[in-house]
Length: 308
Image (cartoon, rainbow, N blue to C red):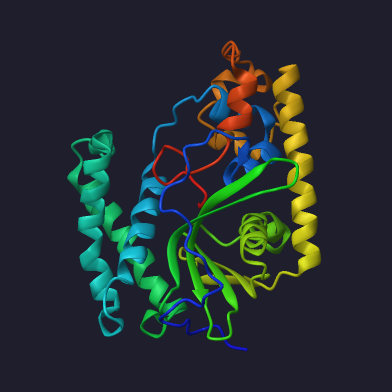
């Protein structure tokens, strides 16, 4: 079975979800927010309950722009999908992001050389993509696909899939682009958690277990592939249900514990963390509702998401 070249027309089994998430406010979880809680419950609180702002970093914004270019690349005819075309798309996607979030104009200050170097680093990531896949042979069924499903305990799982390929026999390949480094073997399971999350949602919505989950790491040019089983996706569902019980318990008791690790050095909220001598803000009066109803979807800060 080959799913390297997806069909130009999606098979009937793939139902197109709505372009925008529904307005209904419901207990929900995304892969990134689930990962936040597993990494540090207090981080989940800061992001979901307190909704503390996080300044965008050049690396995170670069990830957003590169994702946008790879999405737009498939708007071109197959013969036009080459490295030079991707580079030509880059300035326009950067400008599009600036137009949507003017605050990003201050990302590099008055240092034009820093912007030039940043754009060059984005070009290098795009060039590396073409060493990993041949987009002239691909016709994705979906790009930036919003997916969601409700579990039997009422929890809604939702998120965005970078790309979904569908083979002529209906086999699905879930593809996610990463602009960071590939994980070591020790941390592969953590990296695959997000993909199993998407695999679970697609299985629950389409009744078919995806044939392949694929992470494309553009920084070091590696591809991580994994063929999930129904048994593993059921285990992922049980894990998410248990995780949601823990989130609800933390919300009801107000016990959002810090979990200090090396990752604290990259956390914007470290000054507020009790583990580092800080004091968290007072919990909002509607903390339980916020924790239960706002923990999904893309992170507001560009690039800090699902996906990177």
